[in-house]
Amino acid sequence: MNKLFLGIFLFSATVANAQLKPVSYADGSQKLNGLVTSNAGKKLPGVLILPAWKGIDEEAKMAALELQKQGYIAFVADIYGEGNIPKDNAAAAQIAGKYKKDYQAYQKRISLALAELKKAGASADKLAVMGYCFGGAGALETARAGFPVLGVVSIHGSLGKATDRPNVVLGTKMLIENPADDQSVTPEDMGNLIKEMNEGKADWQIITYANSKHTFTDPKSADYNEVMAKRAWKHTLLFLSEILK
Image (tube, rainbow, N blue to C red; front, side, top):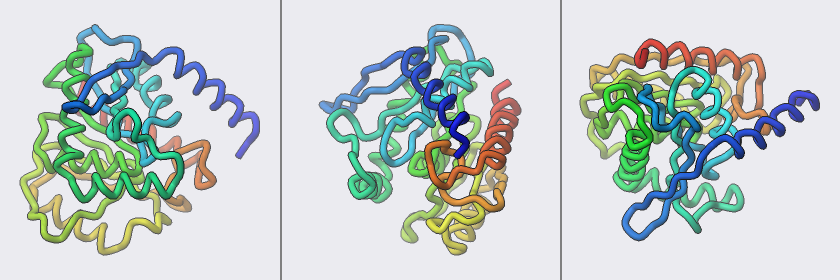
């Protein structure tokens, strides 16, 4: 990665920590710690950000700040809860796998975060959800749960779904941003998702990014593809503008 760009990214991450406001909420006795943009309290469209499998990271924070610049209130969800943040990839795989299997628990945490987004001032009739990696799977779960959002964006998300789960009506618009060389997404996963979206009568679009591996949008990842990451972000903003403005 370009050293100058990395330095700018790290500086921006520090700024993100300073500008995003912590929000404590709960799922029963489990404390959750989210983040909201500093424009909270205004009546604006809202975007819920679901982080990747290690929990709230710099990419999610920077996305929130960029969305604020575009006139959205952004809320970064805490799915795992205080005391449960994984320290390495093995731990992340274990806890993310738990929520992928217990998708109803995942959907509940998403619902709680959506409620916090609305408490922060976001218009209840102008909401969207976007997520990275494990969070991209959460964006799909948002659609499957029928939550009242206008659109979801899955960015290099996990696309598979248990075969014993029936396909349901998908009433929200769906944008899937998929790296062409993502080895975690099989042709079968992609085919099943397309079948699911068609059977669900969804308004859907898949954009595939060439020469891109799994975490192609994350500047801190070895998979980072700057050109494709910038294109994906533009596609995200275009989609959000269409449905929320």
